[in-house]
Length: 202
Image (cartoon, rainbow, N blue to C red; front, side, top):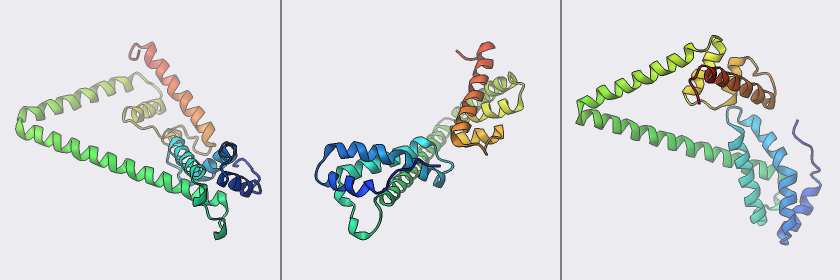
């Protein structure tokens, strides 16, 4: 359950911000940051908390810098106004990240294709590099006896970072997100120790 706060405090804080009271910014952020993050998180179940928190912080900072953007006369509560601004920030961040990844993939594909077209030997080198990486990953996976550990390591090697992806493997998706993070971290640490013992990681 998100932390409770007294919404009756918000109009007074808003008026103080509009009058230039510098301490009102700290009080507003302290009061609303955690509730806004926790209210927004269920709307983005597959997005990491850092992205959501950044979206909320940006919305709060923008509001505190320009409090007159909020119009009390429209009948929308301040916390709902900030919730929507935070949601918009997260959506924009996700869209920007998706565009960045698409550009990188197009550039990588174009580079690979042009390299192969210019030098057929480059195609063989790329295939050899892919095969080498697959062999290395296979050797790492064979060091782990637990199938779940193997699946977790495989995801890590693919660059996966979402907690819920690892939680699904561990069968703990029903737990609160904080508990999922702890269990996922414990599993990753255990895998790292196994690999270090066998001299595969520094």
